[in-house]
Amino acid sequence: MKKYLLIFLTILMSFTKFNQEPVDRIGVKGPLILNNTTFNLSWTSKPSDNYYIQEYLPQAETADHFNQMMSIFLLVGDTKLKNAVQQKTKELDTRKKNRCNV
Image (cartoon, rainbow, N blue to C red; front, side, top):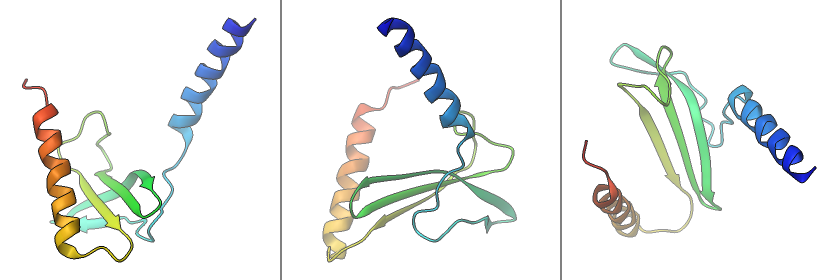
């Protein structure tokens, strides 16, 4: 019985994920226009209490297959600019090290 319940919940959660519209968390719902390309809000996240991420894609593109993406990273608080830049640089360096070469 538990096995069937787990399968049912997994299927139900997968449908909900695809049907949900992204939630604008920072007041920049869009669409945003850059170089005559319109970017629509496609994904948002709040990894911590004071850190927000929003990603925007052109209408014909998806998160799995895209050529262009616009991202906004917002850090709220009394963080000094130098510390925020160091944190982002460290994050990008870690991503670079963990990236698979294709």
